[in-house]
Amino acid sequence: MSFFCTAKYTLVFFIFAMTLFSCSSRNTPAPVSNINSVTVLGERNRDTIKSSQYTVKKGETLYSIAWRSNSDVRKIAKLNSIASPYRIYPGQKLILVVAKVQKSTKASKDKVSHKNSTKSSTVSNKNSQKNTLASTKKQAYGENVSAQKSYQNSTLELEKSSDKFSQKISQWQWPVKGKVVEYFSNRAQGNKGIDITGRRGTKIRSTAKGKVVYAGSALRGYGKLIIIKHNDDYLSAYAHNDRILVKEQQQISRGDIISTMGDTEANKVMLHFEIRFRGKSVNPLKYLPKK
View 1 (cartoon, rainbow, N blue to C red):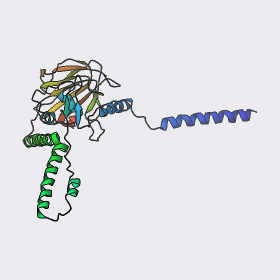
View 2 (cartoon, helix red, strand yellow):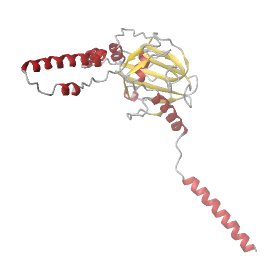
View 3 (cartoon, rainbow, N blue to C red):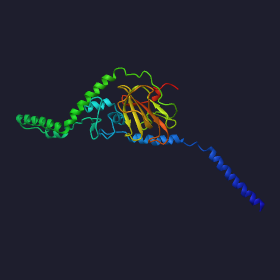
View 4 (tube, helix red, strand yellow):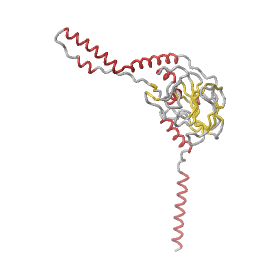
């Protein structure tokens, strides 16, 4: 009897030991910060505007719309004939991208493909074809043709200005001290900035001098957000703030306190920080001083 008891306890001990071994040898789970950041990142990506037209909502600015559509605010302003300081209003319809005009004249060509028996009839048909094509073009493309020309002209102007040297920022500084837990990614659905953790209420500072062009919470996935225009080339953004301490159109200097760190629309207290060059996301670590 004692033999069976001993064997039973030995088997239980063996199973217990194997369980401990399997737990200790298991791969390390993904940090909670990574899981949380993926959730927040998904919200930001879903808030991206991909349509060619957009209706302005309350609390939005042209800069916030350009930010969501990954576009240069000057392109959108030119396309919609909006002068600086780019004031817009709720309900206003904006053209973000003009699709290429695709001409389809196959039907018209088929109507005049047959040959006429007399010269006068041929001339008459040619004139009729020209009138039909002109009428079709006017009706089918109408405003799109003029909008396309406007877009092309604005694009050419921007390309000419892009040929010049970019307006460099003399000196950048870190917006806050803390640990970088998520880095910039060039992938389509990747992180378009860096995430820095810290304590709630930690002061966030402007990374360079400029003007506040957006301060609010209308962009899903960013929480309380601040966007600063440093010049015609560079913008910076500060997301998930607890408190916003600046107002739109306010001029600020490098190092000015603009907000406090929080977790609005985030799963932990952190700052999501981005830099954009002519509307496109760039890696902030290429601009910020080395730690």
